[in-house]
Image (tube, rainbow, N blue to C red; front, top):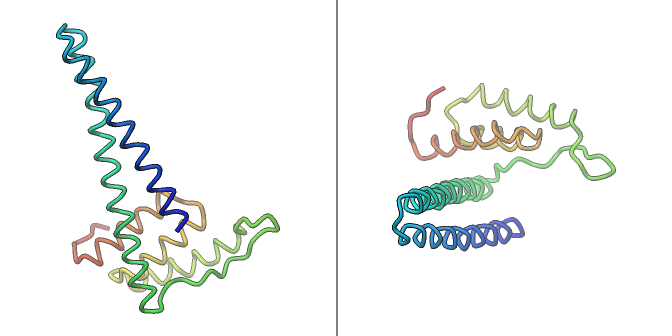
Length: 150
């Protein structure tokens, strides 16, 4: 729940920022000179890109949470079996061991979104966020029945 609140607050702050930046862009365009219109258009592009990025990330999070809920209802969520350091951080060797099992599971059934979901969690635990995101995107695509390139 804490992550959802943090995400909502961050998204709200970004939306306020986009509105403020957009209003400045409109003011620059209304000034009417060639330079201010050029800058105004450039400034308006930033909120458009930001809104698109925020929308895509929100969709991704919503779909990943839906998969987690479905997997939880099936009793298939990965169990946290990782060893931790005294400071609470995940032990690297433990994460690598779990990752190897999850990777083998995914290689054995590459068309199962559940195995890709669990692999994404293993990548995340191993602190490999880009691969975790790609694995989760693959899980989402497989769940939705879309074709996935290797």
